[in-house]
Image (cartoon, rainbow, N blue to C red; front, side, top):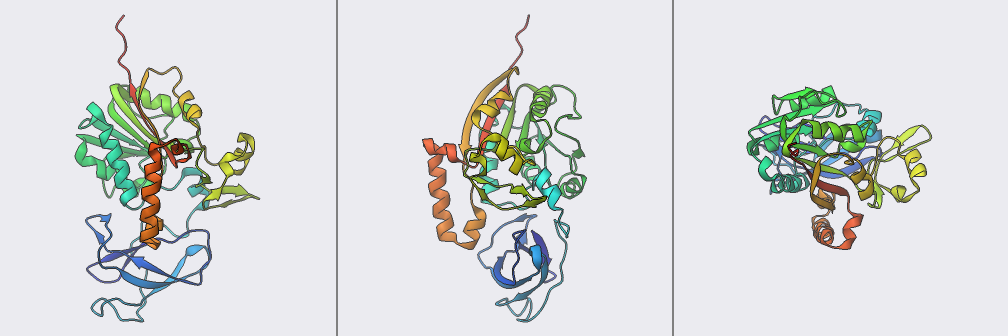
Length: 331
């Protein structure tokens, strides 16, 4: 995802799929407003000239108002949220954070707030905050919000949105016991070296009655969204049926990321003083499909999110669990 400034007044976004080679492709760019990506009613259509691996050469406006630019004007790259060339190995091992704020992120934030319970308005930690999108949008709902991530360059981006960020690993959280009322782990636990240790650390720093809100990939989903490792290279994209292979085979093809059944996930909490508040499997919001084909994408989103209420939810994209730390019994 890149930002391009084509006038003194407006900045536009472009999302380029990585790992593919294009000669040209038409895309829509949306104005950037209020520090987050908000689709506008008026879109500008650009022809995008791309080199190998999605690196942008230039973009040419096709129907922009003359006040902004003429038909054949070329624009240099402006301020970006992602450095180029991109580190594909880091993307595979650490995952890619949310760079933009769209319907999918808004829906998940609503789920977080609806299930925060008494932890709402307390002190929250975003464990694996990335570039700070959830951190920034949770701030108004909690008295204090802190972000932690293992990748310092991402924290530099998050620092532009929120001041309270620090570097650290999920297996060794740099906080004393009973510090937070809520911890958000959003699509992070699958990337850590020791997921059981990371869960234990979260419940060490949670106060009694505090809650963990956990999103992580579901092994029942028909696609591996983190790509595969094949013949010494990472190959990105939605790879079908990888997660349905026997675990040993699956882990050879995707050694860089974990995936969970309900049983796998429940075993991470063995021996901990916990109460399960919410155990769901959810589908995605499919914002990228909606951008390309709004009618088909919105229908797909509506159908799949309706399936969350049925046994077909086992095919969902992510687990959504809310787990509360129990109060200790006095002796």
